[in-house]
Image 1 (cartoon, rainbow, N blue to C red):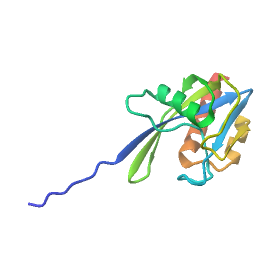
Image 2: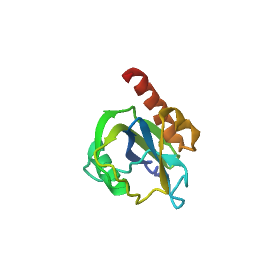
Image 3: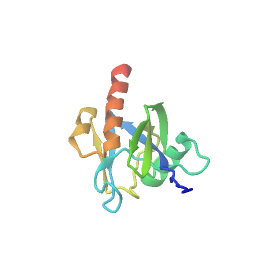
Image 4: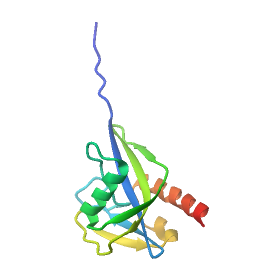
Length: 141
């Protein structure tokens, strides 16, 4: 009898923030040293053991941007299968509670009007978040 071991796919849950401020949305450019170098994303990161999505997001935004956020609304989850791992993006619409951003991981950030979001090179998963954000805006308005 031959035994076959199938390795389980790594599943990574990544809460991220669609940060609204004065009618604009924050986009962060990924570091050249990371996967998807220099592409744009909504800031956030992997959960630590025992964290809720919300706790992890607040911690990640504090670590990456050195600001405090208020979570307003959860958007639909986006799943990206990368073969060896599955990324579960959990986006939240947020507002800034503090306003002086200090970058620790991103190359740069941009503040864009909602209609400008498609004009930059987003990671594939974040493109789905943009569409879900537009759906959210259409219901909200």
